[in-house]
Structures are given as structure tokens and as C-alpha cells.
Image (tube, rainbow, N blue to C red; front, side):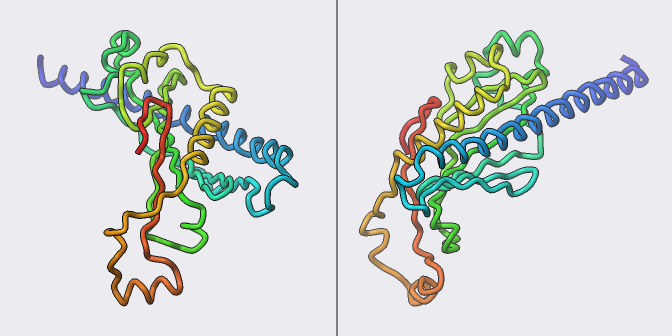
Length: 228
């Protein structure tokens, strides 16, 4: 191959990849917009269902934090939905490469991602900056608006419907409600005694204004995930 042919091939690949990645980004952005609408509606539906049955402080709260982040508080849990601004490809050991869907068109492997994190709501309320949150799930979206959801562990099952499932409000609501359900079902665990039996003077001073004792919660998720 001549230098001119190499350059032409490189430029062609650059154009193709850039076009695909831009499409993936736009699809992910559209998915995040749908997600926000679903969460906004869920807030209304949940409040209508539980108002008067739980303290007002426990009522669901939806908070849009801009183009890449949104919060949903329910009870003592805070779920943060975060859209990454970049487009990714999977490592060579990921089960996505074993699917016929990707074998037929490798460009389908480029995906945008929306992460779902779970924190204790009090961690943010009291500015406990050392508290621990958990990645509950990740939603991957490609150029065809196909998606799959990945939990803690990867397996072949996770991507089995990648070629079939396309983004819709119904699917998004199902994903969100599963995340909410599992977040509220797994309660905060008391830290192991040996982990908290010693504290520095600085820790105790800081704790008086905002706790620096690390708090977290074990978390389970059924999107091919085990309990943490």
C-alpha cells in the first residue's frame, strides 16, 4: 500500500469512527432525556401513591442537575444517574464480542454509558465526603439505539438481547424501578467494630461539623450482579 493509500485509508477510518461516535453520543443524550422524563413522572406517581403513608421527608424527590446528572431521592437513599460525555469501546474480554450482532458490524460495539450510583441521602445532606456509594448498574447505548444493562459482574447473559432491545420509555422505567427497588431493600450496615474502634482527634473535631466516619451500605442488583 502506497503512502497516499495509507493516508486515504486513515482518513476514511477517521470519518467513519467520528460519525459513529457522534451518533452514539446523540443517542445517549436522547436516552438521558427520556430517563429524566421517566424519573420526573415516577416522582409524581410515587408521591401520589405514598403521600400520607410516610413522613414528608421520605417522599420521593427528583432533582435535575444539568445535562449530565440527575438525582432521585427515595426514603434514605439517593440514586444518582450520570451520563458520561465520552463514547467507549469494550475490552477484548468482554462478552459483547462473542455476539453475532457485533461480529456482523464491529462499529456497533461503540457505546455511550449512563451510570447509576446509590448513596445514603444523609451523606450529601451532612456533607460526609468520605462516605461510600455504589455503582448499581450501567446502561450502554450504541449507534442503533440498542442497549444492554450491566451490573457488578459481566457474563454472556448480560448481552444476549443487545441485538433486540432498543431504547424506549418503558424499558427505561423498568431499569430505573429495578435500581430503586434494590437500593431501598439493602440497608446500611454497621461498620465492623475493629474498623471504627480508633479515631483521631481531627476526625472527632471534624465529625462535630460534618461526619468523617465512613458510612456505606451493602448493595445487591439483579442485572447479573451479586450482593456486595
